[in-house]
Length: 274
Length: 287
Ligand SMILES: Nc1ncnc2c1ncn2[C@@H]1O[C@H](COP(=O)(O)OP(=O)(O)OP(=O)(O)O)[C@@H](O)[C@H]1O
Ligand SMILES: Nc1ncnc2c1ncn2[C@@H]1O[C@H](COP(=O)(O)OP(=O)(O)OP(=O)(O)O)[C@@H](O)[C@H]1O
Ligand SMILES: [Mg+2]
Ligand SMILES: [Mg+2]
Image (cartoon, rainbow over the protein chains, first blue to last red):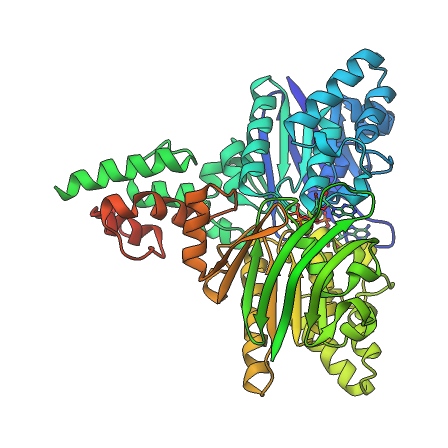
């Protein structure tokens, strides 16, 4: 089923001279994992905000489950389409970490007993239990980002849009977020990742939508698009390590797990030496 | 001259039970290019705040030990004075930009240094060019994308040409080609200032290391508020790998560290092709 349908979307910020998005059209089905990629200022965040109704199209339309976002309240859309802002501080307002998560759940009418259970669960998923009573603004950069993701994930939206999920993440946290996002996809929900971290995108997303100067210049299988040197260059991107490795070795179906990759490489190439 | 000298430095934020920094002993000489990395929440930004005097002057808490930046004792030197020699780019550009135009934000630092107007103009132009945002000169920082804001924040510090440059995750929001060119430009700037007789010290806090590696003289790894590794970049990364400290080791090195002993590799490959050749294979296609 089509979850999000974007048709001939044009968007212009008030007072801005030109359009930040021009003639953007695509559909995202339930259960898809999509990376939105493109240079600084390409329009990724603007697009994300149009997908969840924070911004409304200047021309064209965005439909969620067939309903135009113009006729839906921001809260109604948010219940279905969760959006994690690239800057966590733009999202925070509670004085305690746990209340940051509680707020959305209450708003959407979750029963109190369930709320406490969910808070416990998401805090533990993101290793934030010890900060439960702390002020969100007094967390480290990466801790803020994790809380921002946790507080939206908590109400289990049908689609989750995360703007720059890997900012401030060490390796372990990055792997953890990758696991969390993959689980969401495996449950048949959508994950839309906006990122400059192409290696991260390649481990999660089947599909990529590539924007440049407000227009879609690529939409298709991520691995195919990011193998296209010309497109990669044009979009100020970089080829993910895993794709480069596949191209150079002729091996296929590689996954970014360095233990496994190392064994495969040793086996394959040590064999040809002997 | 010594740029940074910390002795038995400890800090606890007011209201926290845990110490954010514990017994830090650290000396950084003028002219060094140092990366500070470590798990999220380990105390990197806290350390950067100490070096600017924001701790203790703007963040309440308990500070013990000694902290000197160019012989200024941060405990009793006003931040405004430290700021004449040190510039910090914060992790969140929102905390850096506060005027209504990019140009004014970038001019703010040089104006505070009381430089003559034509010199300020030159510095603003140069900083905007270095980060590649000349076209955004008259935009309001509020109306910029995340990456554009980060570039403006970086320009607003570069325009001051401080002797100690501290960057807290400067490329976190930049696209891959901007990240690469920004890092090159920063170190070009350092080289040209050094050639003109200065000695610029660069301290970068980052989770992403790959693009920086070739410019670094030293990597410091912090874990749970303590310095756990400090030294030559490749050795520090390998030791972090052995100890399982979860820092973002570049993919190529992830593989190199795993296979080097068993395959008898002596130095890390710089390209995937080189890696394959070192392992004894021949590449499957010509490129
Ligand atoms: N509030 C605003 N008012 C006017 N123009 C804006 C506003 N926000 C963004 N823009 C402009 O719209 C364009 C698209 O911005 P957007 O934030 O969508 O880019 P992005 O692809 O998310 O970039 P980044 O990778 O840097 O986050 C940019 O040129 C930006 O300067
Ligand atoms: N203003 C503050 N008040 C109280 N505690 C704080 C404050 N800022 C950070 N902390 C805490 O101090 C510890 C170190 O935080 P710091 O911001 O220095 O980490 P970091 O290494 O920069 O992490 P990241 O990579 O996630 O940015 C963390 O446990 C954090 O929760
Ligand atoms: Mg953005
Ligand atoms: Mg930090």
